[in-house]
Amino acid sequence: MSEALVIIPTYNEIENVSNIIDAVMALPEGFDVLIIDDGSPDGTAEVVRKKMVEYTGRVYLEERSGKLGLGTAYIHGFKWALERGYEYITEMDADFSHNPKDLSRLLAACKNDKADVAVGSRYITGVNVVNWPMGRVLMSFYASAYVRIVTRMKVRDTTAGFVCWTRKVLQAIELDKIEFKGYAFQIEMKFKAWKHGFKIVEVPIVFVNRVLGTSKMNGSIFGEAVFGVMKLRLKSLFHKYPKQA
Image (cartoon, rainbow, N blue to C red; front, side, top):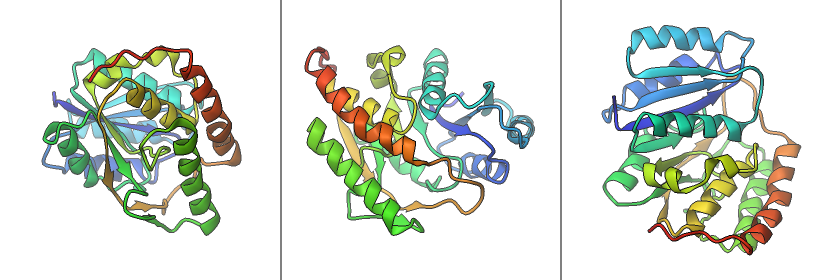
């Protein structure tokens, strides 16, 4: 078993899942992969099962019944990883919007540079997003700025979904008390890690909009992020976060 796991949630990703697994398997660090599939009707899970045979002991599949939310998929994966002793747990998309080669840089930030959390950041060196409509770029960029203002968290890409967590961070965060299920989940996780005093670093990446398959993004997801942030900030005023770092 590797010390590093990549968690990839899927729903109808049959066009991408085989290639994304192959790309991660080709990296020199020897990552394991956990696919969490929410009952994809297109056969995504069947493809993963074939990859489990091809990469015995390195590719795993957890199947859930129906679309239960991105946040719950990652919480499921985090608990799975902690139970099996992984030291570095990375979350990423299945659609190649995150370059699998950047996994090596995120892992190095934690393993070699002693970060507790490494965020693959679209905004730390300007705006590094390819093939997104301008409206979506502006919405994402200003949503992150809004989160920084409200929470006072010093992270430029607060909604990033390409993140490497060290084991101790996931153990410190009370995973069962994470409230948000959509993209606000990403904000809540980073906020709680920051409140606990963990070292968060941002690694610049280029985010490329998916070529194959259908985006799961919609207005309600952004709505949860925008309105949930204020709730997150207010609740934090009455909650103590023991410093872990």
